[in-house]
Image (cartoon, rainbow, N blue to C red; front, side):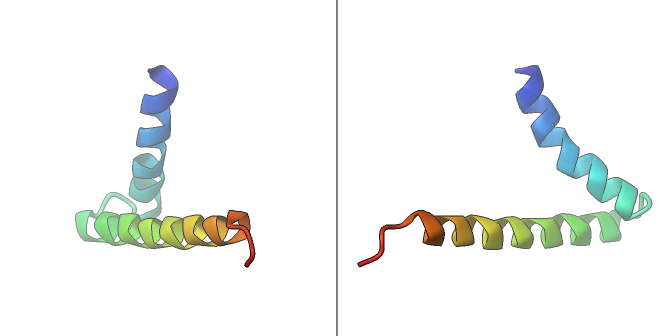
Length: 52
């Protein structure tokens, strides 16, 4: 449970630090990290999917 909580809070802490505590910049940073995560997951799924 502690590890799961740490994994959930880590991106939030990184976003706040990178945005220097400004709410709008924090939300923008979280959005950018979310887009990056989607792209990374999509790429991994494409690599793992068997080729036809």
